[in-house]
View 1 (cartoon, rainbow, N blue to C red):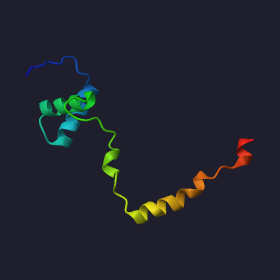
View 2 (view 1 turned 45 degrees about the vertical axis):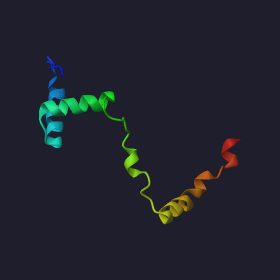
View 3 (view 1 turned 90 degrees about the vertical axis):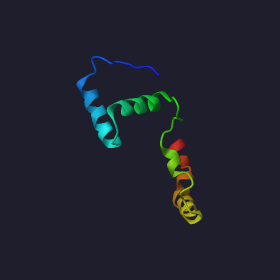
View 4 (view 1 turned 120 degrees about the horizontal axis):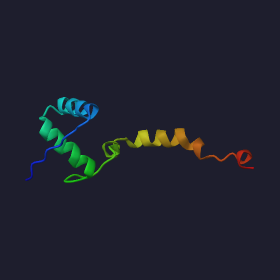
Length: 81
């Protein structure tokens, strides 16, 4: 493993890292490693966070959604002339 020194970190970035460190309840070093890894897609899969919602609807909820949004499929011919 390598050691890195980062100089001239802008105050707003340092503050954001401190907030993130507190949120994660870890060390600043570990927070920086995790944030860099996530941001660069190293050692993890990149995600937009939507996967956590996949498969969470029941069949009934899906049916209701389809029913409630069916009208969005209708094309108003007058608007396309």
